[in-house]
Structure formats: structure tokens, C-alpha cells
Amino acid sequence: MKNLTLVGIILLALAFLLYYMLPEFSMVKLFEPISLMGILAGIGIGLIIGGVVGYVSKGSALKEEQKRREYKQLLKEKAELEKIAAANAVNQNTTATQPLNRDKENTQNFY
Picture 1 (cartoon, rainbow, N blue to C red):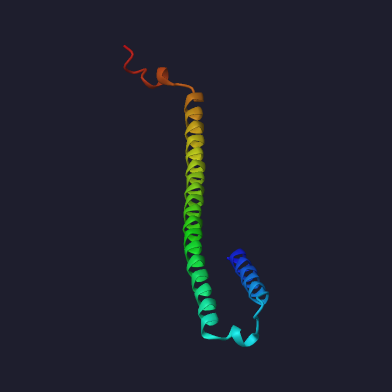
Picture 2: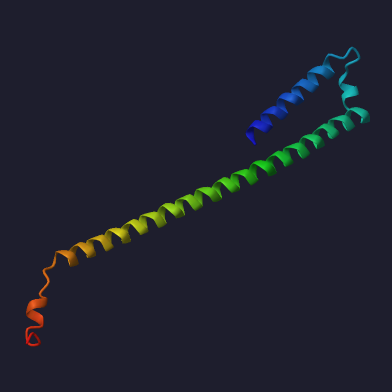
């Protein structure tokens, strides 16, 4: 939006410079109805173009922000899944390293 303001000021200065370079320039003619209509029409067109550009840039910014939020959510879910996988791996390692005492458990039913 700051760039659009800068471009608007430059174009306004250029328009005034061109109007000033006219051979019949006078400050009184600047405030005649036809000149004021031209100025107001230029301002109106500038506002319309600025509104459209602002609407498009805001939509793009909102879509980009939504993508960033989704990416952060995916990173959180990935971290949670990695923690769960690590916990499962630790649980499997501890159960696999424990000795099996099946011989001692079922000795009364051996014969």
C-alpha cells in the first residue's frame, strides 16, 4: 500500500507538471469546473485501481498465511508422531530385552 501511495504522488506531480507546462497556465484555471472534474475523475480512477490491487494482495496474503498455519500444524503433528514412535520403540526394546521365564512358570504342568 505504501508503494501505491508513492506511485499516486508521483503521478499527481507529473500531472501538475504537465498542466503547468501548458501555455495558458493560470492558477484560476486550475479551479475551473472542467479542471476539477478531471482531477476528481483521476482520483476516482486511482481509488478504484488501488482498491482492486489491495483486494487482490490481501487475498494472496490470506492464502499464504493459511498455508503457513497448515505447515506449522503439520510440523506439530509430525513431532507428536515421532514422539509416539520413539516411545513405542523404547517399549518394544524393553519387552524384547526382558528374559523369558516360561520354564519356571509352567513347571507344575510339565508332567
